[in-house]
Length: 419
Figure 1 (cartoon, rainbow, N blue to C red):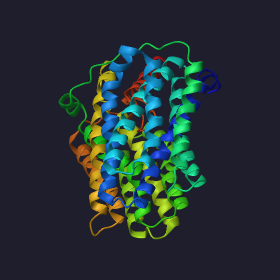
Figure 2 (cartoon, one colour):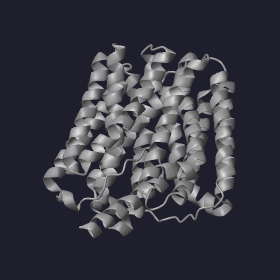
Figure 3 (cartoon, rainbow, N blue to C red):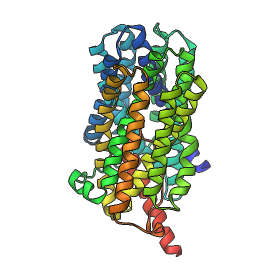
Figure 4 (cartoon, rainbow, N blue to C red):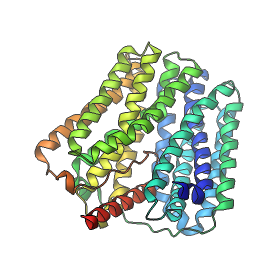
């Protein structure tokens, strides 16, 4: 762990600051939208736009990096992110905000690809798993810190938009001044979705459903809080609990994952996530209960992401894993685009704010049901023949997913050699 920090501290610090900026703008827009009088459906379109940009960026970033290099892509897109954050309060308009969210989603996706390439270059075979874990912790920590910074100023003013803009600008400095070697960047042609579906139907369906859950958490949680009449401090705590749960429960579930049939664990984790959602829907008027439900939903959904990747890899040859990662992220991105729109529609009906939790609850139940079905018809793989579970953030790109798969392969080969 120390070796990872010594070689990549500037990159990790910069990524933490970038995540603070991203976490602030996501939550702040949900609060500011209510102040500006935007209805739930308008805000759902704004929030969905981020995932449209993110999905586009994940597909186009490799080509951009190959053409002009890591440094130029990173610096140029970070500057665009900083500029768009200042434009939000200047032009409080749904169309402007939506276009800004598309651009920011695109930029963040490409920035993540660049940073993850550097991280992979800085890691060795011995510390690759630790580097990935630190990266995930830093990402989550940045979003949690962002929620605390929302309490430093009035959300109806400009200051809270200036803070993330400045942080993103500062984040570039330690990274660009400390990263000397430019990492090699090889792109892999994604596996076709039909092939991927044949290899792992549960992995594909699960990633699509989880895309809706994640986008609801990241995009609509603050909108839910504003609609439910929570204060800014309460909204900040509420959003933070999704990510606190993700960090706290990721590793215990990962430990269990390597010791039992993953399909049964997916069923159990999905049902717990559904229970947390329905608890929030039924008892959302009690703030403490709302925090507990957010902790449970975030704590179940994030490990499910890693579980589904590990389950899919169990059916793939080592040489196919990198190709499959692009398809999994694309499927997850499609679900993420639809998530805020469906959530906004449900919240705009007679269900009111409770539609937020009903949506995530339904998705969890659908995932549990499909996993139960696949456990009766799909091939069973012995626990000792499955690959390692590697924790990974849903905000990561195919590069980080490739690092995780590489680490899983190395761990498996080492275990075979020792056996």
